[in-house]
Amino acid sequence: MQEAVLMEEMTWKEIRDAIASGKDTVIVVSASIEQHGPHLPTATDTIIGYGLAQGVAQRLGNALVAPVIRPALSRHHMDFPGSIAIRLKTFVKVLEEYCACLKIHGFRNAVLFVSHGGNSDALKAFVPYIAKKVTPGLGLLAVYTVEKNIASLQAFLKQKGITPPRAGVHAGFIETSMMLVLRPDLVNMKKAKPGLTDEDFYRPENLMKSKLDSFVHGVKSQSRNGVLGDPTGANAETGKELLERKIDDLVEEIRNNLPA
Image (cartoon, rainbow, N blue to C red):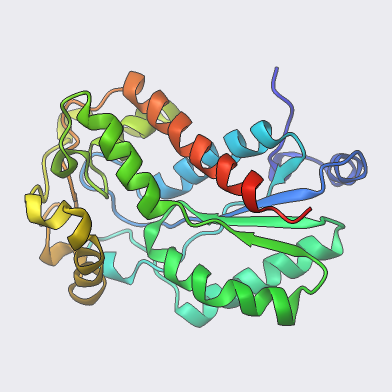
C-alpha cells in the first residue's frame, strides 16, 4: 500500500507529523476546468495533474501534494460550454496565497508545475516575483517540462507508429490514453473523433505560433470539436508508459534543480 501524499485526504495532524518526519517539500500543480472534446471530461487536466503529482511525490519520498489549483487560464476554450476561466491577476493571486500558506505550515520547498499548458507562461513570469516578495525563505522551484515533454513523448510514440498530429496536444491520443489509466469511467471512446490533424500545426518549429493562435483566436477556430489531435485507438497500456515518462521528466528536473 502506497503512503498517503494528498494533503486534502489527510488530517491536519497527519500533515503536521508528515512535515515533522521530513516531508518538507510540497507539490503544487496548476490545472484547469475546460473542454476536452466530446469524449473526455472537463476535469481532464485536473485529473492528470493529480496523477502526475502523486507519482512525483511518491518517487521523491519527501513530498506531499497540495490540492491541485483549478480553474485557471482557459479563456481560449470559452467557446465550449463547461469551460471555466479566471483572470490572470486572479490566478497569480491564488498562487501567492497558496505559497504563503504552505510556508506558514513549515514546508521548506515548493515545487510548481502545470498540467494545463495555458498556465505555463504565467508561472514563468510570476514565480520569481512570488519567491522574492511574497514567500522569502520558502524555496520555490517552477518546473517547465511541457515543450520538452511533448518532444520526448512524440519520439516515443513514433516508435509505435503514432504521428505528432495524431498524438496531439489537447484531447488527442496522448491525453486520452492517460485518462484511460487514471479515470477510464469518464472516457467515452465511442465519441472519440479526430480534431485538428494538420501536420504543419504540430511541427516543432511551429508549436509556439500554433499555441499563440489558440490563445488569440480560440481553440474552436482551429477545431470544431475542441480536439487538437486524434484520440482514436488510444489505450491504457500506452497511457501507463506515457504517464511514467512524464513523471520521469518531472522528477529528473526537480532533483537537478531543487534547492539543497
